[in-house]
Image (cartoon, rainbow, N blue to C red; front, top):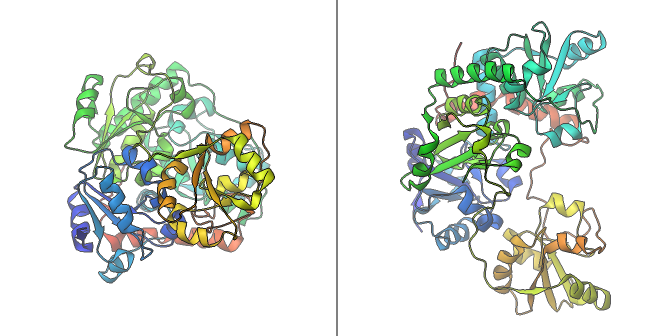
Length: 529
């Protein structure tokens, strides 16, 4: 397997050539330290994610870990899937560090560091949590817009705020604040999405005074102010007059950023182009996308695409094509991606009628090895009569496992399969693998067969079929054959975060501009007034 050095990877990044730097560890180890543009691409999900996230089979791929032994099998698996230009990062994380490379904490670091750079250069206006609380208490003429995903908003929100995720802001702001003297306050959980959201409205020429809630719900909590929970306030439809105004402003903004344009007729030609990696993203809301879509366009709501760019498009230097039905959201999103040094295009002139493809998006998947299956009823009978002889291994996410799993099932990570087997009690005579739908379990089955002579079966339809059949499920982390490291616990999510962790997260964000300067590979250029 060829090796690529830190110097070679850095040279590719600086030149703007295509390269996918893939960290194949679980998300929590990845979040502890990684190169700036290393996308988390866990070994356990390679077959599920590869063809969608790495659409060009000869794109340059460099795989890394931190000595866990996952890089080589991941690279070999990618080759088996048809990728022809795969290499290992020489020395992994330790080699990057030894060569003088900068390492970053947390997740979605390119986007978060870009957000800090935007505030640093544009002096994005903000208000502290006590200042916003005083405005609320005094009945001032304000509206608070929450730029996070709707599910995050429902978990916890600023009192009286309205859910308006990311790229929806410029399209909906005039409906929610028709009086230009109304102060608009944009919040998220921490800093990035409130900074980008606030600056989006300022850049787009919304006439209202606009400020970010400084440090988001973290700042609100650290100020010992109460949050709301379970709210459902959302934005209204945009009037045609406001849509046209927003579309003109967003297009002018994208033009200023230098975003090129494509016609509808060019899409098929681009899709057939194998000389470049092409990502096609529909930046409308998930609900609109579900009602009808363009061919080969995946859903990536604009705000989240800016927030999680390296996860949606892990090939740095790829071509990114954006579409919407209103002329606002794609242009606004593109103007940010362009500033983040992406080769981004907007499809011009699309109408709602163009979004006519029905049915949910389906990822392209490689065929899985032949597996022996077991039905829900048969598994239930086995667990009733001789539970000690059956080991049910659940390869869903740790979050989903804690929400629901088959009673007695063990949480296991594919990346730690041998260690997981060692945690199981004696007397097991067969293994039954599951996950939400058993999709991932089918790929894991081949790995497990290489480690045991016992029968390996896959539950037909997975845990979803078990629950649909009326079988009982249990919650919480009842049986862990692997540690819960597949997801990094973000200090800004949930309602039980420690104050020390939240403050440490804010301190880390404040230092990102300095780290960007040390790294030097980003190419970010913030659009000035």
